[in-house]
Amino acid sequence: MHELSGLPSIPIEGPLDPNNIETSPLGTIGMKVRRGRSSGGWGGYGNEEEIVELYSEARLVLRELATNTKYKDVQIAVASTSLEPSYSQACLDGIEIIDGVTMRDMISYAQVGRTGQLTSRKTSHFQLIHEKSGIAYEDMLFFDDCNWGDHVGDLFNKYGVIGIRTPEGLKWEDFHRGLEKYHSVKKGDTSK
Image 1 (cartoon, rainbow, N blue to C red):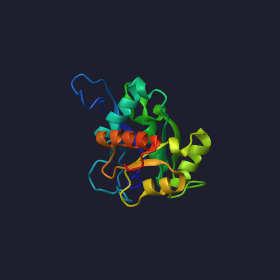
Image 2: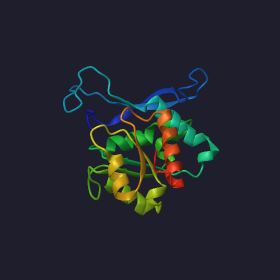
Image 3: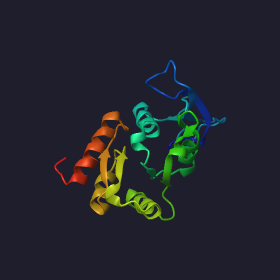
Image 4: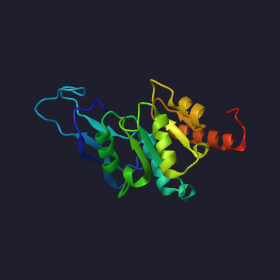
């Protein structure tokens, strides 16, 4: 999001359930940047629209977490090294997962940015999440779409956080692969 030319503040409406577009209630599925006369800065892409949306399968995973009672006790955290935390916060506040429930409503802990105690390494974010939540590192499951570094390896090596790299965005099979890995590690099978 640090490449956007401004704060995403215009809601984009669409079907909340990507698997059931015909009957899905409508809601805010993305946020758009209000364009001024100039489109300079990092995100100056000429006439291209600047819209932030979830990957459709990431939306499905969040919908599953929001609606399946099997996950009622799961706490969700966000760890982002965003250079523009206000952009990320606006999206958390505005993008809906199910009717009337935003990403912010689903998130128990959000550590976004690179200032104060937060750095470009996710280890600083997870340290604060651990301190604020009291959740043991080995009880956490982390999905990371970073494709320029290995936050998953860093977090496992430093704290023992179980993770899955998702460089093309969170996919449905990544979610289930992560759950399988989590349960295998918790049972003591480290071969996966």
